Image (cartoon, rainbow, N blue to C red):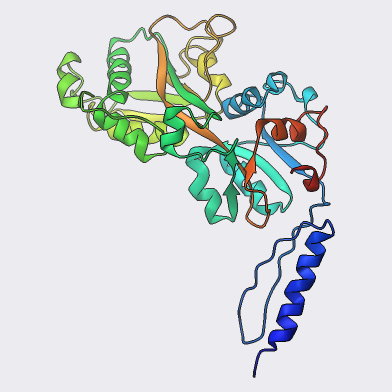
Length: 327
């Protein structure tokens, strides 16, 4: 059967006219059997559905601070009532994949998972969230992944914990971090584990009856599990137990109200050492840098977003209610 080129041209012209009349339209023509097609239309008159993490999330704190809405880091009252709350990076990606008019933010490490589900990441202030741009600081929507550890009283646990912290800064540790989504710089001067392991006398002894408890940020969970899996073979095969419930639990369960519940914990934000998280000197530091990326469904025509636009979407004082407001 011959295709009617005139009819196809008229159809495309009609779509262009709709776009010119104020309708925000994107389309894709998918060939199946001969002559079949499907058109995906994005309606910019639809309400924006913003998604956010819960108030214990370091990702949320980093995002809100960067867009100029610090009050919303731990308090929902500064947000529009239309903002929906999710529990993790994975949950965020799933929600965006199911919501054509949704927008949300998640860790750089989740980009591939998001892409597989039809969620694209936007450039921020015109800059793409590449590792190079994150490390250089040109991509400004970023934060540090940090660790803290308990002040152990047991000498064997103290040995394993201190050796683990040192291992994270070796070429092997940094390679593991990088392979699991963390943004790091590995230099020619970075020591290897072999260079420093003799500093930790007895670290290679049998520790199979010792359990080290890890927890804190869900954003750092993948990196933390990879690090512990690699290091345990270098440290007598200790047992690694992971229970990640959020950045807010890092200080609390190592040195705070529930101290020693965790031996090592992670946060996807900075610790408030001069305020509510007075960690002892020398018991905390940085693991790597992470970008926070903003995502929408693939059919959404938006490609770039600014901090000002994010503020207008999330803040209860913001004026952006429908997608046509984002220009």
